[in-house]
Length: 152
Length: 411
Image 1 (cartoon, rainbow over the protein chains, first blue to last red):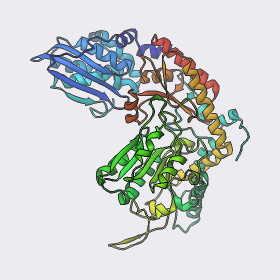
Image 2: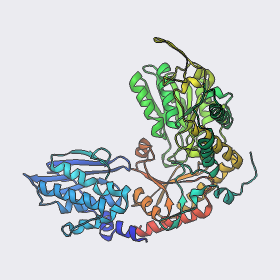
Image 3: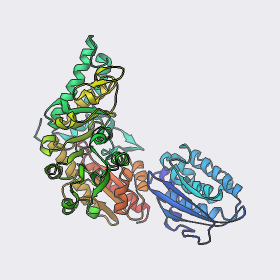
């Protein structure tokens, strides 16, 4: 298997894609956002329980490729307990990481997605659920990789 | 035209692009349904035109204008012959299949489709043969209706056709070869049935032109649209065939230079066919490149190409069907030269990303057939699509890579 592929499909990504965490509907969610990539049919819903500014619980549902599913799994695991501002700051860091490959020490398991930057066509997959999470902490809604913002 | 079996490996050497490594592996180009590669003869025709003959067409008096006009109109005659249309008046140059269909929807549809008329399509249409009709229906109050397909095998459910061909149907537009399934539709039969009821017909030939013999008179359609870039020609050029009697009654679409006979401040009259539908300076190098492509294809022989495509598709289908965890789409028997498939628990985009790193160019996604994907109950498929320069050894390589992908994902 070639090195770039091993960078992209790291063990932690394959494992989360196969057994996604928080893969359920949160019945008491008070923030819900959808993220879609119409080009490949990836489609996720992020559910949050927020207490004021703080994410108390997070989950997701939907379907898509290994990268997008693992990303949503790690996202929902990571943002529990974080404030809206912290989630937004983390979104910026993840976005930076998947487009440049730069991951600082604070990224933890999310650093597994640094290899995505070598696959420009797959950046959208990695960032999709983060778009949805950003929309959810801000109040909810629907985001699409085709309209949210210019391609990285 | 040649009917003997061509020397396929010699033909392959006519395509400079195929001789390269991608990510350290020999390129296996299996994305031909999206666009084909170009032989040297086509590339050289474009260079020759720009280096020697470039000038605007029609109405020019000078030598270069004469040359470019002659070359442009010779390409129209070549296209007529390619489709076996009766007259060059029936050949309109377009940017491609999509523009051809939009021309019909706007110009013909704008005049002949009224509120409560029905436009009949099939469930396997490409977005380009759905959306223009939706837009027309929106404007006119017409309705859309679809001939259903028979599950994953993706054949038209022809038993239903009789009940769908009601007097409200004014147009039946159908794909010749499905880009997502490979289904080869019996368009001559479908057009004959429509014609008996006075229904106008359009065939989307994006995947059939240049892959099999196409005779628009034998098909008996009113319109047939195709793209040059999928059949060895340049991007940005295609043609729409329209039966003369239908085109004569169709008003122009775009207004401007070239499409007029006389212009007054308040009233204009139209040029003759086909120029009535070609406003403005056309793509000139495009038809010239297309001409070279059509010459090339007919030297290879379109029956030969069809047999070769079918052989590769049949082989790939059979090899994939022997693997565990593969879901195949499209007909088991005669088909166009492509195979659409899914691996259990592996998304099409992961398949395509990994295949790419082994030098194998596939396509994954909805193939611009979102309603069809919904009908099949899948978000997307992976697709390998072939052309005459592909080889059985490349299919073997592709199958090896599919096995690697399954191993990688532990399925």
